[in-house]
Length: 223
Image (cartoon, rainbow, N blue to C red; front, side):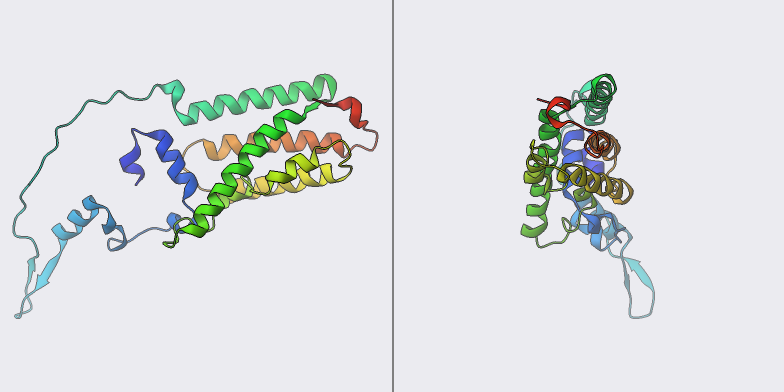
C-alpha cells in the first residue's frame, strides 16, 4: 500500500504507525489480491488445465473500460515532509534539552508533559485500533514500546514535586522500553529513529538528575 501513497507522505506515515507486526509479514499473491492492481496481475498469469492436461491462459485478452485523466500534482515541499519535520524537531528538542542540563542542570516539566503526553495519546489510539479491528493488521505494534499509552497519566504523576524515587524509576523503565521499540519497530522513514531518540535523550537527562543523591528538587526542576 505504500506504493499508492508516495505522493502523500503524511498519510503514509499515519498508515505505517497504525499497522502492527502482522502487516510486516511478506504476503503471497493470493493475500495481495485485495488490491485491484495485484488482482489484475494474478489474473494475467493464471492458467486453466484442459482435459488433455495442457494449460491455457485464463484471460484471452484485456480491454480497458475506463482510463482516468492524469492530473499534474504539486509535490509536497521538502521542508514539509514528515521525515524532515520530525528530524528538525528532534534535533531542536535534543539540543535544547542537553543545553539546559549542561548549563544549569535543569529539566523542563512542561516539555516532558508535551512530548510524553503526545506519545501516550498516540499510544492509546493504537491500542484502540488494535482492539476494534478484526482483520489483525493492527494487532501487536512494537511502536507501542516508545509510544507507550501509560505515559498518560504516568508522566504527570512522575514529574510531581513530591514524586520522590518514582521519577527516576519511571524514566529508567521508559528508556528501556524505548530501546526495545527502536530494535523491534520497523516503520519506513526517519520517524522510527528521530522520535524515540528524542524521547530517549529526555529520559536519560531526567534519570541522571533524579537518581543523583545530592539533587534538590525545588531548585533544579524548572517550570
